[in-house]
Image (cartoon, rainbow, N blue to C red; front, top):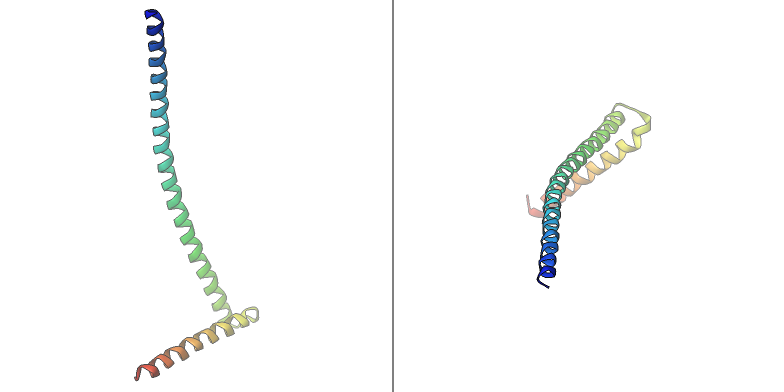
Length: 100
């Protein structure tokens, strides 16, 4: 009976050691994955900013093309001018409402 208890205790010890080893491996993997996740988040944010910059540059290129007389972008230029005129009208209306 005592031998059986010792064997059970020995088996439990082995299982505990295996669990501790697995726990240590999992915590190391978690730290590794957390670091990788942070790096990927930074790369994603950087790429998103680059995409926004490229989209803005593309918009500006189309606008410059329209200004230079490219017939494909005349509508874009007209829309841009209309938008600017609306902004100016809005500003004038605000100035008149404020009593200036």
